[in-house]
Image (cartoon, rainbow, N blue to C red; front, side):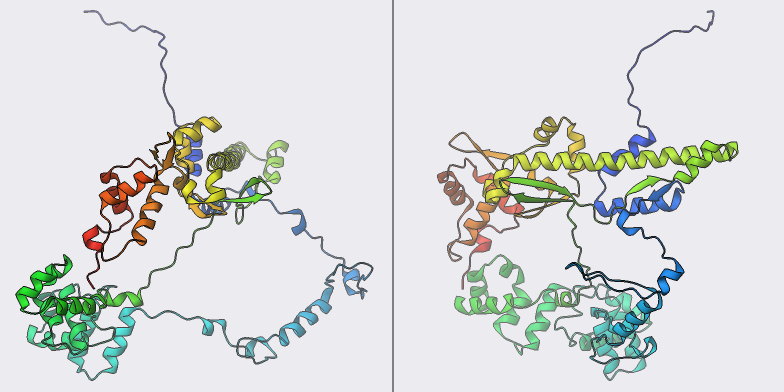
Length: 479
């Protein structure tokens, strides 16, 4: 069979993701703080990218002879003008700082006399720090101290020991008879219940600290903790041979124990959310504003552009400048496009959810991505990227953009109500119920049906579990 080469034309469609398009998509789903970090990194890596300085920040240096003259303040108008002139300004600031009162109430003549600001900083003690302090303040031998440090070093933030006795013995090269007395003394440390190996031991330590050895409380914790969790009070009473009221009292005492004694020394950092969009009402209209705080204004450096135009650089340098210039221009355009897209999406959400902004969560409208996509003429995937990790500050509070997108339930009047509104209503119903006679999911569904919301019992169950609310048997209060 003969082999031959031939040319032919073929038309096909292919989706090509250029690096520039990938960057634009990446910028679209970044948070505002992540965008700031990316811009700062680009400013460091791209010499053609510069930060625009606002006009009011630019000040021409004053001539020397003008600075040495005494300037009379202008009192012709009511505005206050601060005149900064040479050494006089320095002397004025020195006199101001000399008379400035620090937190101690004392005055200092120089910087060397003032206390260091580092002395004003404090660090919250962790659980490990607190336990080690008690260990070193106690009467322990060097061997017991080493064992105690090994035990404390393996206590988690909840206050539980996460190392077995065998592992502690192996790490310290001692026997279990040597480790156990040290562990028992550490379990007497503050906070009460620390150093326990499981929940049962943690609660028993707290009960014994209150002097309840041999009581109904201790007997329940030792043998009937599972029954206590499922609230089988009658079964516990029969097993212990006591009255059910005594079990109720013991359960009430146990409910006051702390199952996580170490959490009061938790070192978790507080994460603050910064809004990307601000929505405020002006008259009868809602104004949407982008949060540009901390986001620098970018421009392409004219110096390199002039050098390239004048032909004062060689070919390699010209190629490098051209590449960096294209990168800078694309970044600036991508950021501008990102801001415009977010603004359009925010405006569309405000139009759809105006009743929510006016009247609250009960009037939240069912909304899907396609509604906003059709409204502003964009693809649903773009709307999904825009609403990821973006937050809007509204008169009703701070909400993630995805919060405004939710499914709807039909009503008897033919309208639809948002699922978030139904969840809020379920929470309100449960909060107002009689704790000794909690409502079942079927009863809640009947109440909502009476309010024209068509909802099934299993839907109520699903929403209740999403709200992390227990069932009627779990919510029931026996005492």
